[in-house]
Length: 160
Image 1: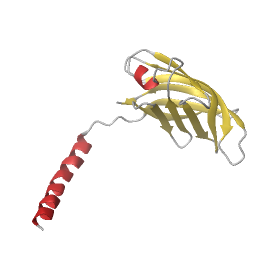
Image 2 (image 1 turned 60 degrees about the vertical axis):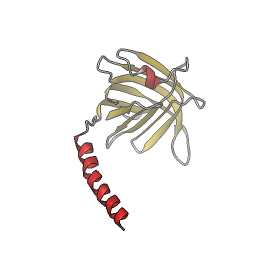
Image 3 (image 1 turned 120 degrees about the vertical axis):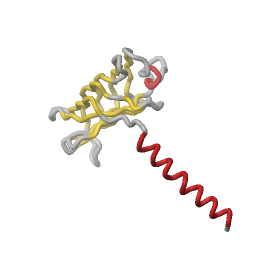
Image 4 (image 1 turned 30 degrees about the vertical axis):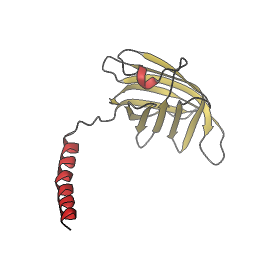
């Protein structure tokens, strides 16, 4: 009984510290602009946020656009997450069924999952990510049909 009481007391003492630390931690907010269009539909926008994991993920959410990019390796096999930690660099990523790089967008009641194309990413001096993408793929529905997804990224912050 005494060991349980000590463990319980210890847990209650740690919990406020963890919550307090989390409240004071610096959090990166979504920013910049993700713009995407599927086929002849309208161009839609959202803010975006990237993480610095390997593979790098970049996501955007708004009432009009949900966007996801997983950035794998470039043609030389170098991870985009590694390259994009430096200022003023660029990387071209191929999207194929065999690469780690994946891209998908949902807007105007439809979605497109990229299967073939290119994603160009670059950093600015503040290490924000910009670029463009142009891929063909399949509509994400019960009756998949071909689709064309293209757009731009501008000033997307990275949660490092």
